[in-house]
Image 1 (cartoon, rainbow, N blue to C red):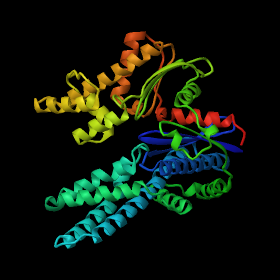
Image 2 (tube, rainbow, N blue to C red):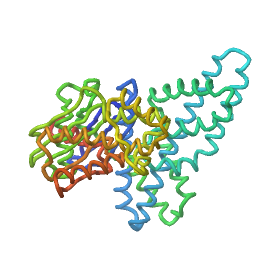
Image 3 (cartoon, helix red, strand yellow):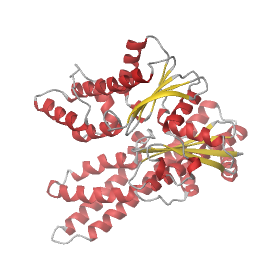
Image 4 (spheres, rainbow, N blue to C red):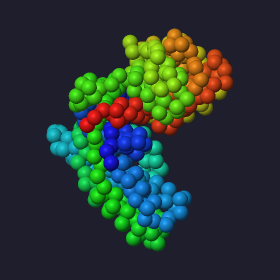
Length: 431
């Protein structure tokens, strides 16, 4: 069977999906966009291909194993989590090596202390890694930097005298990890993950079937027939020009594929916002977009998270804990950050300020929808910002308030919509 890859190279994340000849989605890959677009593309494609192996493994297990459906789902979920844990450990060791190399370049009387502290920090990170990853690693959209940063900083803050030096070393080394293709033995990691699954749950009755299915999946061909790319950074993709497609067209086709009744869609990505109208075939009939600045997009939210010194993933939940809504007059990055600091200095709760910011973001998006032609049933919300619970809630409320009781689609896989559209275009090309 032939397979097709679609890649959406955005300003903040790179997404890759694989479809089979029937248009069935069999794999996803996601990474944060690095300064090196080629690295981001390679990583996302590789993650999609690894994820495809899990799909093939599941297919083989269904053929060869008598495991009940709930047992099979539990096993596959645990296996994938433990495989990604092995990847996490690999990156953690890479980061430690870079940190050790950086420490060796230091001079002065503090070098010995820094070397000892860094060794203790990474020993603690490794000791706590399994329990930590079992809790935090379930969300596949949380990247290595997000996972390890909070843990590292927590340890570094115990050494106030050297905190600035420790943070400086970390910032330099995490960039090196993010800009390097992870060399790893996938089969070895998979074997380790299988062994760890056997420790966490009883699979002895199915061990032989699992081993056979694993070998069969490893041998199956995963021939990529065509690749098509899209996204904010699409011109940086190493594909021929005829394998590059517009974001607008890809999001329209992708949204229609995910929700065939879609007629209006809103895409809030890292760098721009797009309101798109499509026909019954997913073909774009009109659109309106804001691409002059990143106001109200993923980069804007990232900047606000940095201002508050919290994780980007924490913004939505914090906003939903608001006791009142503080009106924010601007979604311009500069003015909003000044207003944020002013409000905080006046004693306002950050949750209440964030509620106002999220509402302002969606109001801005709704104006684009209005200019594109309004909401025609069904409405689909796509892009990475769709995972922000507060934005999603405001979108639901404002769409219903302005356009009535229309069907609103917000998928957990919304971030992959553009990549799915690109992969669908790939299925229409000859290899």
